[in-house]
Length: 294
Image (cartoon, rainbow, N blue to C red; front, side):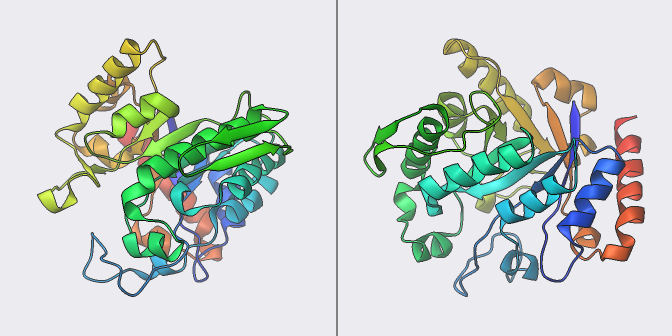
């Protein structure tokens, strides 16, 4: 089991550079950052009466993680999550492979289809096509990462014979972990990803269905993921989720279910942390983690 930290850098909280240095110093295995390009005023935010400022001011994930990678040596850098349907396929493939080069093979590509229809539509994406679009973009990026001459022809993505370097350091490419919930997410994980990043809801109502996995259902979903992988002759996908699940599911049971990484972070105080407080906050979070897993 590995233990990482999620952090959402903005214009008003601590520098991602300082957070990355201190997260590595106290022993976190990875650092994850989220993505939202913008928040249209019409956004129907699912978790609060209005859209929080942190969602309106998220830094670009790849620029942020490049800065984090440049000042660290060992900590992995994770997108949690890159919103693939609303990203350009060719640019994203190059950003991922460039970051993997800069970090010397420390990238984990967390991806999602997105939930904010207004955000997608501003990027020219029809929300009804986002899952098919995500799959085709991932498949095309894999070809760009692994082929000297890349070519891909799908319903939504068409890539003529193409050269693109650099290739990723990791062979064949950085692991791809899909975030999401719902009746078909596990099939997507097994079909074209390397892992699952469920958003496990500790308090659930049906308005959150297909956006979050109720904690009571998570064990059965993890077992189903294992069965699906075995049926297709594939290794068990990685599972990455929040340390919040430790309130309801013991660490040993999570390991038996196949959970490979737990992530701390996104707490209110972390969203507001300032540079001068980062060392003490990181030490406190590491102490809190050690208590949770002891």
